[in-house]
Length: 326
Image (cartoon, rainbow, N blue to C red; front, side, top):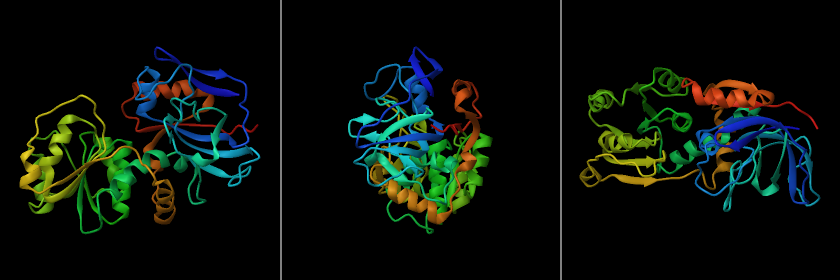
């Protein structure tokens, strides 16, 4: 079978490997659509938050078809459409455990969720990043149509926040300097966009909100300067949810606003425990995340997909697809 492999030192290839076998509690899966994430690029260059070893098959954002099941598997059967979580105890699927960027791969039954009929393979492979954005809206406490929310950063996670918040009826303003990504945010439900690099960004938000500023601020860029700006854009008693990750960075911030504005501030990581909720939300609302996918490559050209992510800054989400049958 063909599989994308990361070999170390930034090297990658599409290799011919033996098909995997399954244990009695495992499921054999045929990949249908697999997303490439910034975390995959970190992995390619030997950086990740837990130990791993090369060679490794990446792929933690995926949708797949069940090919075969072990005798102890009861929830799934061949032909079922599934997606799967990527943080499994101390292991991370697609990082410390080889992932889904292969014609065939293996997962434990407990990692899997049925993909609703309303969602395509492409939409299924977007569930993992969307679940992070959706979780942020859950953690914003009673988010509804009475709120104006500012989303800092229109990468895949920030755009997921936009789609989830807009589907709840929230008035969404996106702070994003890139015109293409700002336009995509409007496609997904943002009412307005502002440029966070503009020195008058606060005044621009005042004009949109009558001086009230944001009821909720979602920081999705992971940039220290934007993390600081989130405090400035927050209104009185606003809720701030920090999603973007930065380790070791710093920026000046007017921390006194946390008290003077009586702000609620929380940080989140990932999407723990909300995958079933996320899938129900997508199926019922009809939110279509497919505009996030800016390029698609067949698995045989997966190395070209990686190069596109590395070299083309216009890419938002690149997918690798396979129609192979065992």
